[in-house]
Amino acid sequence: MNVASTVSRILLGLVFFAAGLSGFLLISHPPAPPPELAGEFQDVFFRSYWVLFVDGVEFIAGVLLLSNRYVPLALTLLAAIIANIIVFHLTMQPMGLPIAAIVAALWVILATRYRSSFAPLFVQRATPQLDTTAHSHLETNSATLARA
Image (tube, rainbow, N blue to C red; front, top):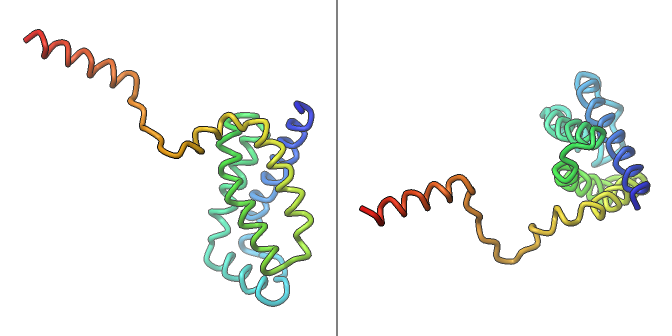
């Protein structure tokens, strides 16, 4: 499983590093639009500069994955991006679904390796934790007040 997750991390990192970087390079010369609604979507995506935000997130997540730092954060960022990629291809350009499925599979392989980092997200009623330094400061103040 270590080899599969390492390969998945590197491939996913390369895909999103390159995709993010290409968006910055293509902003003034977007690729030819695909047919129909997908082309209209791409046109708005580039003309509104929304592409810069999405590609910025992709680029940062790719760098984090390639550097093997903050991998759960990178996976969290990419979850939303990948979900949007899948929905785009399901609704507007089905021929891209195989690549979207491969990217999603790489994400699942890697997320499975880091599942303990995501476990706290699935608590039905989470309670906020006090900062330990603030908590000890409160205890000190409480003890001082009790003596007064």
